Image (tube, rainbow, N blue to C red; front, side, top):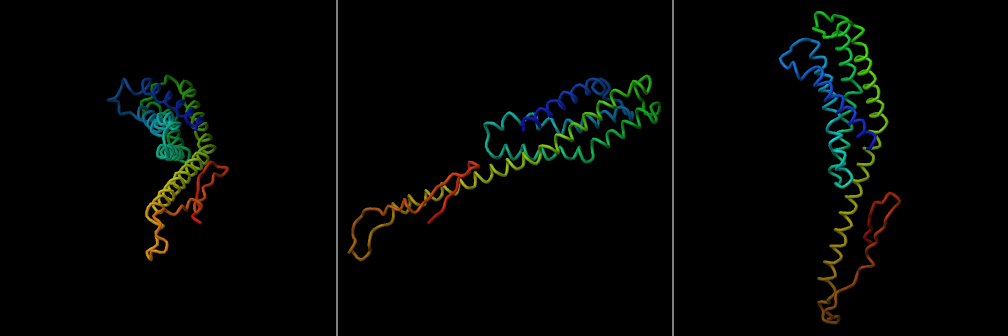
Length: 203
């Protein structure tokens, strides 16, 4: 999660910088060049900024936040499989194929190359991080969900055992008229496995 959050921070910086560099001062612009940057900022911002913002809460929050983090991580694969490369194709058209007709603000196509190469490099890096870590984040979320389910079942078993001690143990025939509750603690076994997950067996 830390690596994904760091990637989220990198994309947050990219989105904010490019917004003020190319978009913020010309919101009434309707050229293809403007939209090529708008879609790049929108893609990287939507896919990565929520992930970066959510990350600090993971260490103190419950499984709901972990599940949200896993969901946001999976969303980044949308960029890896399609959106980054669509943006690069749009940039190539506005930077190189038809810069004049697209309203390019670069003086020459050579001026566009560092920006194009930079976004291509960022897209490759983002894709690599998604492919490397999304699976492990989902696996961690699944373990947390399993742990919560087993802990809930354990608490329910303990509650039922305590309820049984309070209501059972007297004989209706009077031969065993003792009002002492039946101690059935031995009917519950609680264990802790190597994954730090709790479970129980009602024997």
